[in-house]
Picture 1 (tube, rainbow, N blue to C red):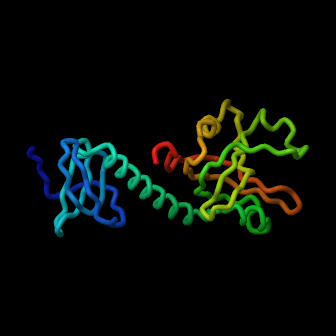
Picture 2: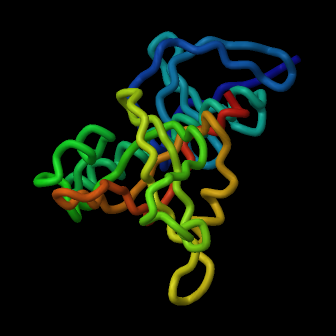
Picture 3: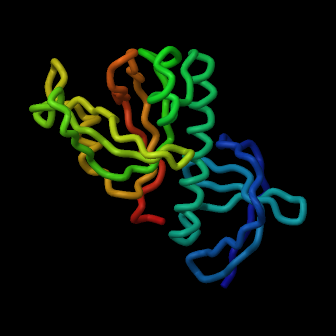
Length: 205
């Protein structure tokens, strides 16, 4: 079975940090080893023996296409993180929200977390809250559990699409939460979510 590499030319791509050499598998069963360099919507660039080559994504195995999609997502998240920092946002964590009210009250930021489930509380202040919000329980990047992630169900103009996405989450899903920390002195902490980005579904790992 014949297959061809094409030398790289002018190519609009998402350039990422070089990974370890990868065995790429074509749908025909042919394999080739090469370093991931970059990718676009229909092509992926790999480096083999010091030379860059372009492969058609459509010619690659399902696993390789999923790998490329994951690398592209990582690049977008990295670029987004830099943008957040430029805007004065901070990366939040369970300990920071719970233990440092003077630092994070009404602070916008993000959390890269693993979804653990939906949480509920016996606090009388929470009576009836299920009608207008979802409470998520997550593990942050340090592995600490945080159970006061709030997603408002209804906005002034109707159902909140963020809540609709949150309702589809399954245990183990990796997600990025963007929103505002609320930790007034003497009151319970919370993180109100404005946006959810799915990084990786547990079922796809």
